[in-house]
Image 1 (cartoon, rainbow, N blue to C red):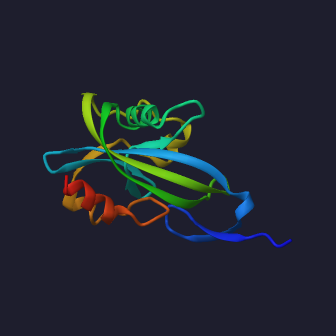
Image 2 (image 1 turned 45 degrees about the horizontal axis):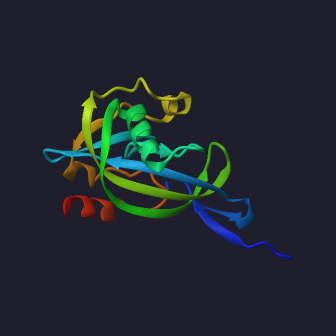
Length: 161
């Protein structure tokens, strides 16, 4: 019996081909915070992502959102509104694994804290830098470190709120 192949993509949107039966499932939750024309980002690789990360077993996606944003930015946050859910077929180059990932994006509100990288795990210390606020117009010229091209759609949704 021939196995079905699927295309997966890394954070640089390089294409890989894998057996569909080798995909692992993952769920990620991200927060988008806006304040006075600026947007909070997590510089990663040679681009940026929004603060967030992987749901742990036994954890709700809202708990993941709150935990991950705190770890990556130092801020305590509350979700305001679900923006979108995307499906990504992601190739993790370092682990040489392929994932079917669900990417959940929330508009969030900062309720406490200050920017810090003290919550970084060992992997994040390698590829991530301290979170920062950037002008929304500046963000449009930066590379979004994501396996799918969704930045224009996400920004459009956020700016229409």
